[in-house]
Image (cartoon, rainbow, N blue to C red; front, side, top):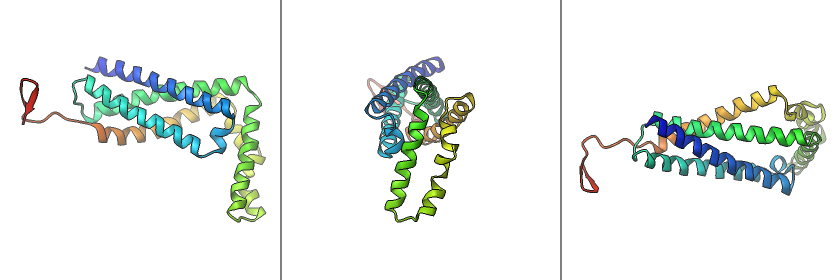
Length: 190
C-alpha cells in the first residue's frame, strides 16, 4: 500500500503543481505584478490549489481501498505539497531569472499600491512612509531576488504553511474502517 500511496501522491502533486504553474503564468501574462498588488489573486489561487489537494487526496484514499488513518492521509498530503512547492519555486525562480528587472517592477508596484491603500484608510504621510520604508530602503527587493538563501527561506516558509494546511485536511479526510464490519456481497453490514 505504501508504494501505491507514494506513487499516487507524487502523481497528484505533479498534477497540482502543473495547474499551479498554469495559474502563475496566466496571471503573469495578464500583468506581471498582479499576484503581488491584488490581494484577490493569491487568495483565489490558494483556494483553487487547496480544493484540488482535497479532491485528489480523497481520490487517492478511494484508490487505496477507501480507508486510511491520519498518518497515511498526512503523508500523502505532504508529498503532494512538497511537489507543489518545489515546482512553484522553480517556476518563480526561472521567471525572475529570465526577467531581471521584475523584482524592481514588483517592488515599485507594491510600494504604490500599499501607499494608496493607506491613504484611503486616512493615514498621514509619516505613517505611510514608515509602513512603506521596506520598499524604499531595498529590504523588500532583496527578498525578491532569485538567490539560494531566498529560495531556501521561501521553501521553508511554504512547507510550514502547507504542513499546517495538510494537518487540517488530514484530520478531516481520514477514514478508518469500521471495527466490526463484515462484508456480504457489495455492501458492508455493521
